[in-house]
Image 1 (cartoon, one colour):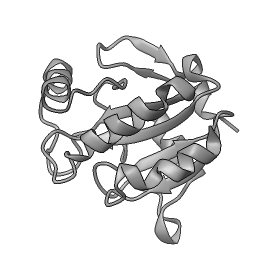
Image 2 (spheres, helix red, strand yellow):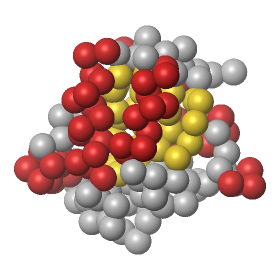
Image 3 (cartoon, helix red, strand yellow):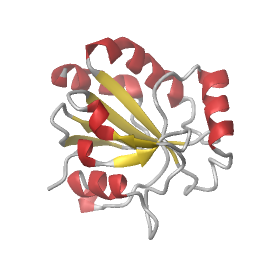
Length: 159
């Protein structure tokens, strides 16, 4: 079975990014969008990132336009929005699909590792979160409504 660190995705600059570069880190993967009711969670995510990044924690933001077209921009626009509006410093991937025929293999793995309520595999909305331990195992899944600060204790346990 795969581990999180076995995947390669495109980063926000459309370069291949082998997630093996994050091996040994605790990682929070979040499908993000710039025009969503949950977009303000960027602030909380950035706070978590700054608090723990020096202890082997990172966040991977994955822009996705599959939910009501709430991430309409291109990678450059997304990056600019994140930097200017929320001063995001954690890494972002290129836009990707989290569900459906063109879903990113990384998301297929995340969803199969941690199904949602009643075993549901699909991502329901923007800002769903997956917590990955230092070995690359997906240990927890959080709904969009889960505020980043409420994940703090779970991150702390894994660090």
